[in-house]
Image 1 (cartoon, one colour):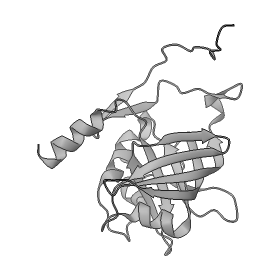
Image 2 (tube, helix red, strand yellow):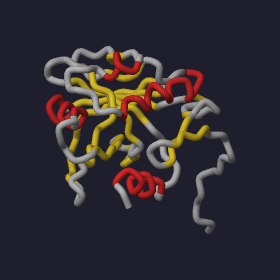
Image 3 (tube, one colour):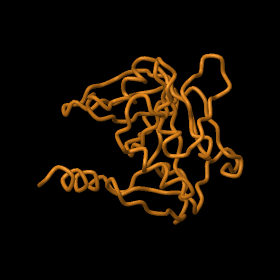
Length: 193
């Protein structure tokens, strides 16, 4: 198969995923924003998250920025910002901020050590400190981060539980976005004695 159809097919094999925006900043202070669909929960205590980034190359600004600064953000995408978010998949020159190019607003967490921007328009955003980079067999990189801070719109919280709403988006492959809807909630299972 040709490259783009193959990428779409193989990416679709994993089923529906959450598209998120990864915010980073260069040593020169240029804000960078990229869209990924590889966010993974890797543990709760300590809170670890992972993302997979393509092999480093000319346009690997996100990888270079995270490696250089040791910090990055994740901002969830909702229906109102999905088109702007998808435009972050274009290969912008290093001196261009995707925030400005697509019309999203950088939000810097209020901490002295924090410089990587999150997306102000996002309802769920969190900052990560780089813990480890694992090179995968295909030369992609698994970026593992310690969750440093979390900001959630209060309307999405219900008794310490995050509740997504009908405005949420998931992605199949690399181009098709879907809206989510609640189906059911099941309780914690214990082995019957």
